[in-house]
Length: 121
Image (cartoon, rainbow, N blue to C red; front, side, top):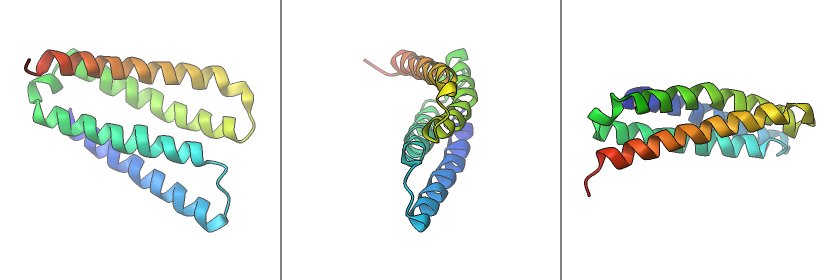
């Protein structure tokens, strides 16, 4: 599971950096919330998840880890697309954006439970 998180983290890092470069080149920072989320929830969080799962391989084989992976990686692209639309003025996507955010939060809870179960006292 760790390697999957790490590979996708790098994809999100490339997307986040690319968006940052495009915004800087155009002097238009409208999508900075998308840039921030790509870098924090996509790159940083997923890289940390991946590194932790690599350091605790038994935890990476659990149903919690698989649920965490799929919840995060299905909801996160939806969140980024709807956040982009929302920032661009399409407020009708807010319920979908909110739902995707909640699903990501549930994935984080799966990670937290898994970490607590697989770390020493």
